[in-house]
Image (cartoon, rainbow, N blue to C red; front, side):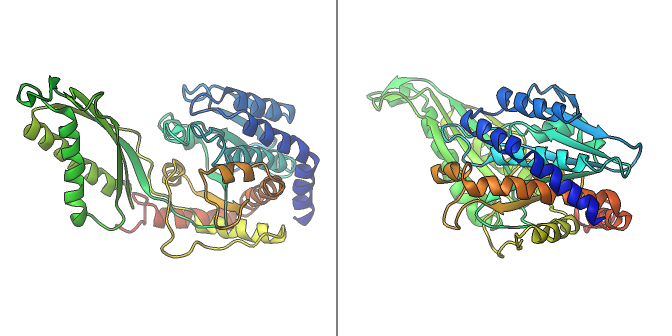
Length: 396
């Protein structure tokens, strides 16, 4: 077994410069959600060079793809997930260039030993994590039903396994009223006032919401001149909660607030929400195996601090349909957080390059353990079925 693990690590070392160049190219050419054509092209070319069968587009998404490699029939299907979209105005300030290169390296590394055991290794290209929910759309298209395990890493400011995430969605509220000069406001219907009533209503219900709920909003359009009663106003609200189920309850209450603002002001409302990013259920059996493999590579993994602030990602939706890990590898000091210019710079640092190679090896070695150890697979699925809501054996 150790010889096969050495073969995986050697394979990753053989392509280290290809992976680093891939990361640099993606970083230097930031592409927004569903527009990641350059990144996908580079990834597909690399996988084809290593004899992966590439399918693209996938699930009717032009920038989604699947690259598959198998030698012996049967066995589990282990997928490494690549993200590659950038942030508007901030480039790769979330380090998706690292995620993509690491996932590609893991898939190629694990493929080096598939002549020794049945199984399939997959690189799944998942667009639009930053806004659009590419993974959710691929779930709905049935792509994740064809996988047994999903693994990825995310760059951060600490080495962490087992970090959860909040359910989240973006709510857009629009009001249409009637314009009038401010000298005669009774002749108009103030769309901005209606939107302000929604903000006031949200503030009024905060005390009746659970402590895990976070609602933050902005006014996107509130009129053109202060002496004109605005006939149109719009706002956006990011809504987070500990679970998808509770988030949906909050959305129903916000909808009631919008309808109340209609009655108060006479403005006509429309409300819509984006795809819901679900809470995250990291598989701790898999995470512990990843931790063990990373220790062998000189990286000590820890669990998150209790009470730590959590973000949201469509990997949460994946974790509800297939055993999943989404571990973090440090590329910055603790004080630097994601979605900043400093983090974008760190995403092409020498430490980022080290993380790409070590992360690829750690993921590939964990995939190898899954393919080889039937007992490990049983333990992974036992935890999955006990922890994830709606699964057999999960607590109610």
